[in-house]
Image (cartoon, rainbow over the protein chains, first blue to last red):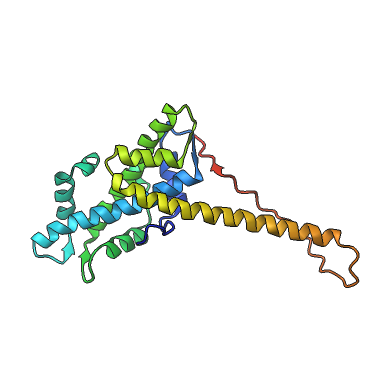
Length: 81
Length: 143
């Protein structure tokens, strides 16, 4: 996906997640958009990182354990533990 | 019936598409893996929101803005997202500006038609009232 692509994730759903935070008062439309795009980049990243483990296991199907391995191994994913 | 934040999921079809496009052709993804990624994405939004909100509060602002989200990405060690996000934001801003101007032009056109009484031919009495609300830059997230 090119960097200039508009969000594929529906902004309304992302906004619903933002609203779930009791400390958030207001969020601009732009903020919701950037969050949506960031989440898409995150999904791409974690999928690719997990795939490395599938490749190691000589598999062409990404499995749950590949994800678990990626999350454990990569610092940026520590918040998911 | 309050939903737990982690239960607010993002549409499966979109998540799956993003995953498939990120991986080489012929690679599949198990349902469990897809589901786990989807949940991780929701957690990502929640965490990023909380992080971004800290920046807003630091700036004594009540509204979370785009630069707060970008700051959050750096804080979360996703600096490599910042450049592509900035580009996307530019496109988004241009699009929004285009929409606003299109609406303004439509209003202007309607006004001039109403004032132009010197015309012989009958104008379509299109009383086009713009019922839709002017979209604000900031959407309220009421808590």
